[in-house]
Length: 206
Image (cartoon, rainbow, N blue to C red):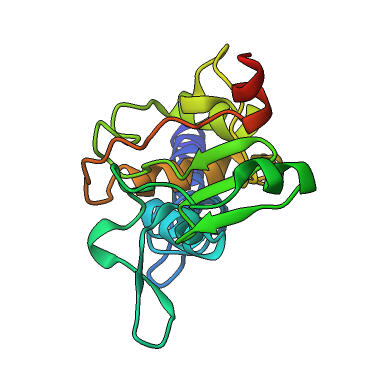
């Protein structure tokens, strides 16, 4: 009888221990929720968090072509979100040599910029192969962390006004969320022009 009571005691203890690891109706696992919240930034999904980060980080300011209204306002072209400087559109029509000597910067619809570094064009970030469609997550991390063109080691540095030296301090989760969102964007085929070197380099032939 004594052995039977001991066995019953062990069985009851095992049941109680197993129930301790289960949630009762209406309760949630706070640790799991904390991890989930951290991963999605409090949004319903990683992609939604990434969309939010792209918006508040002003990515559209440079990477989305603009529409000029009758009032002179520049609105985002919703049909070409994040597709970069349109192929075939010339850069700013300015006296670059004089401007570069004075250290000035000008822009054309905020997608092309001219300054002492030459002329740079906002990249296509959409999920098309001419954008980030063929990129890996690791490439995206390298592009932002190290300021490398297309996220490739050994490639040129990203040019102004891309503020990668600020964005590099985003957390891994934030950058992964942004990349996850970019992978869901409407693919827009647009081969952005290559940057142009400074006028001084062109004149000297370097």
